[in-house]
Length: 389
Image 1 (cartoon, one colour):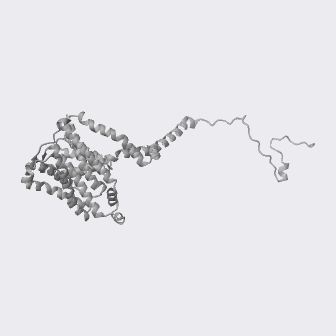
Image 2: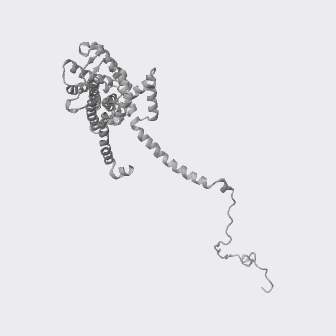
Image 3: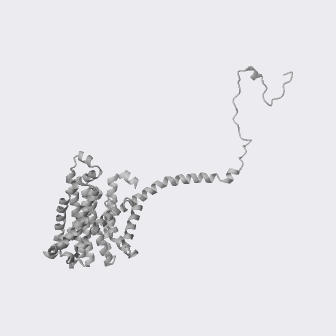
């Protein structure tokens, strides 16, 4: 893949990977409701629904660098907007979606004002107060919201021409909305707004020096995030057909944030993985321990964070990096092992081979000493001189 990246460039290689994987992903997503049981199709629908909410939270926390613990309140606002319109005014299901999106966008604009002067834990506490305050308020507004009993509405029914069951039709509707929402989030992050959010997240002072309007982009981050949460809440009303204040406690906000962190902050695929974690892990925890499912849920979060600190989206890159770092060590170990095999104890104890007596030796240069005494000296091994000599 590195050769491909070098030959085509990073952008072209990314586009080629997307062109190869997108048709396969679409085929698998479209064939899933015909393969799984109705309850499993419902679970997949909820995963897509939560992915929309986490995509909005990812814009705010992962790319905007602002901590929010009140995302469940925006989720509840979108759900109740759709439920009130369906129950009190008998509107169509499709008409509730733009109303919920627009209403939560405006709510996010108003709530983004504290983000201009607060940051970090202080901003997290303010958003958490909104999530804690909303459920009791919904119970007080009984003439509109139904109070503690909630509202029961009709689910979105499939048309006759589709030939699909209710769960299959609902899956395809949520799949379409989720696809549009994720594509919108992707294009938004690659625009000037997304680059400004990244600059604000990395260094606010440097971003302001470069001409980024901090107040505008912080407020817009809250607005976009709230809009995605409102859309997810509207879809929740379509799928479940029932809303109540107890369904949107502050635990929902914490669960969504935990799911995003587990899935991967600042990753385009993190919301999908985090949504699967939010949907399936509580049920798995309930099956493992009926007495303390929360303890199992917490231990699973700790385990995932220990194995993948950057989230599940960064786990493949982490594994490939570890393999790439280990390959040179493996090669060096193989070389040292081969050397050690050559120097076995038998080889160490064996005597050195005798030199070959028949080997040719290079003749040394003749000695031309400057001292006459040395010149008159007899060579070693020469016959003794006689008087005649």
